[in-house]
Length: 266
Ligand code: BTN
Image 1: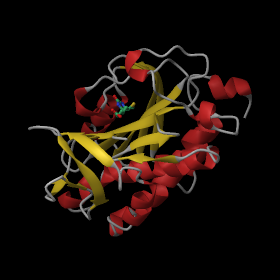
Image 2 (image 1 turned 30 degrees about the vertical axis):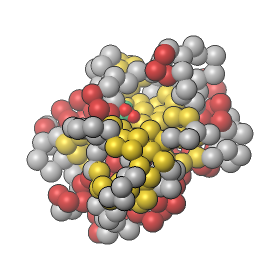
Image 3 (image 1 turned 180 degrees about the vertical axis):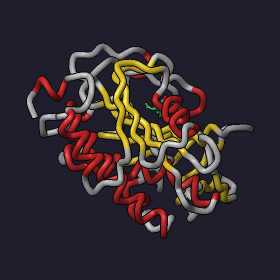
């Protein structure tokens, strides 16, 4: 793939054909110059009856969404911002595992590029490279039975000035020993995710040991901003079969958290 293709506004047609016609179960792929949010567009596709896996990407999102009500923004061509429409044929209790599954796929692909630095996950699904955030995942439910998995991955932020909340962000190109071709990264991510998702459909928790091995939160002192109530301080001791983070506080009480914003301490 040429450098020109790598920086163009959308994957090369040949790659799209390979993904949609090849063995990975990608039913459709659309790439926009600009949308409000690829998660919103994927939810529209869900309402229109699109089959899984529908992929929606964009060069620019005017209203990109992050976790916990935050905004997600990235300069054009600096990142991969896309969403997957899924129709997971699993029990409702297994759905909270999907963000972790997406996180694991991100860590596995990033680990292929970044071989000299630590690549892992901050629970539930922040990709950390050398301790700095390189990607995030926002999973939202769409119409009945449909789920949208939105992924924002910093691919090349070299020479880009970072604003306050992104001061500590890192991109694959900065951490990698290899040139970054965004479309190859996209193809790898879709391939790894789709492979793991096929197993998930039959055995939802089968990937969890792989996730735990990549989860940098386990064993750390943490502060967790909970959806409601006071922040929790303690040690993260595990991730249970439902995907919840287990945190033991100073009094020895074990808390199971299904949502929250984790800060690694020390
Ligand atoms: C996070 O806060 O860490 C999650 C960020 C998720 C951002 C992605 S970018 C593609 C998709 N569309 C959105 O509006 N958000 C997700």
